[in-house]
Image 1 (cartoon, each protein chain N blue to C red):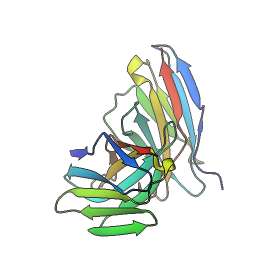
Image 2 (image 1 turned 180 degrees about the horizontal axis):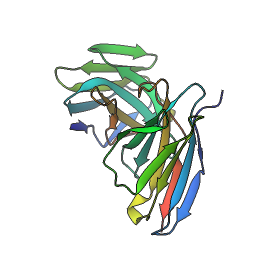
Image 3 (image 1 turned 135 degrees about the horizontal axis):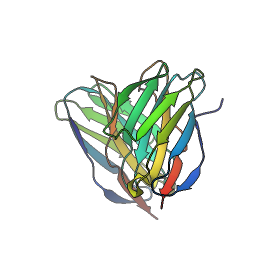
Image 4 (image 1 turned 60 degrees about the horizontal axis):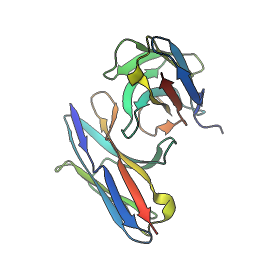
Length: 113
Length: 110
């Protein structure tokens, strides 16, 4: 049984560019949450998707957007990248629309130069 | 809003016991998580407390006092592989968000 998978593992982008990160949830999970984790900090909640809709959102600007597909996989898009967007982006999946029992993926390390 | 505090760093010796404290302030508490995160890796679930008291799971135990807004993670018989960051996170009853603290980096000395 595959756990949560994310792609790519690492990514280097330039300021002003756009990036798309992908996440496939654990089998049986239908809820996907995205987190940003800066070096030495705890994960910061970006948003959560359930039934293909954004259900909750943290304090992130509109440059951060997402999508959930019918197979429950999800994408995180960041436009107009800033140096401060450099971080580890974590995807977590959970069952039945709940945030309890979250399983994290390995993350995507984004570096903006 | 929510506020979560935990020490930035701690050091302990192999074979010893260490307690990592976490205090929180929230307007809608619905449970507290502890996660372990090794450098460069994803957080892994350790425990979830929603009622007051101590929950033991092998070498790790977690305690919660809702009236005091306080939790601790107790690690016994420390091993070198326990060197990691330990994240305290609170679940909000109103919107089901999970808010993380900044984490405590634990160093184990031989």
